[in-house]
Amino acid sequence: MFSKVLVSDDLGSINQGVLTVLDTLKVPKFEQVQYCDDAYIKIKRGIHDKEPYQLLITDLSFKVDHREQKFSSGEDLIKELRAEHPELKIIVYSVEDRLQKVRTLMQIHKVDAYVCKGRRGLIELAEAIDYVYNNNTFVSHQIAHALSPKADLEIEDYDIDLIKHMANGLSQDEISQVFKNNNISPSSLSSIEKRLNKLRIQFKANNAIHLVAIVKDLGLI
View (tube, rainbow, N blue to C red):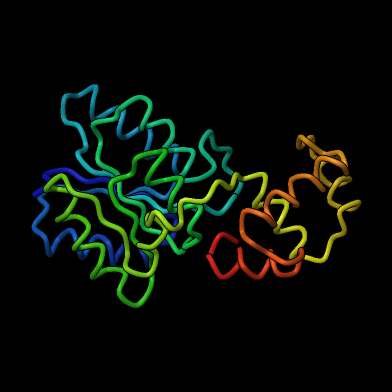
């Protein structure tokens, strides 16, 4: 079993449950932090002192407060650590269950496990820790289909934002203006129309409303 584990989550009640799991699994040394920056510093310090953490368990969402942070989310922290320390095992423990997010973290950022917080969250977390220790990956049952070939759809973050705005009732003209105001490219009305036509064909949607419904059913938004 892992001998040194770091838990990064800004909710103390969640942390306590995770720490109980680690204690049950007889992990001899584990610590907790409530900021991603602190997690990064501890991991770097552990490597410097030749006492590295072997596993990071992190949430994705962290509330913004008075303290300025370099890493505003667990995903930002994961990206940096994966680039600098690919040997570090990482488990995501989050309420976020969008399939696109799961796919990005598992397939692009190469996290070792993705566990959904919930009724069975701590049970699955214990399973995930064991899987990862044995060099296997783990994904919570309710989001496992995110990694199925059938879910291997060519959809980008831009597309997700576009469809979210449509779901919120914005017209294509309004979306174009929002994108321009936020320096999101492409932002022209013609580009948005072309992208939506492509998405309708890709998802075999009859119209924009049908497209939004399909994407919601797939858990992409």
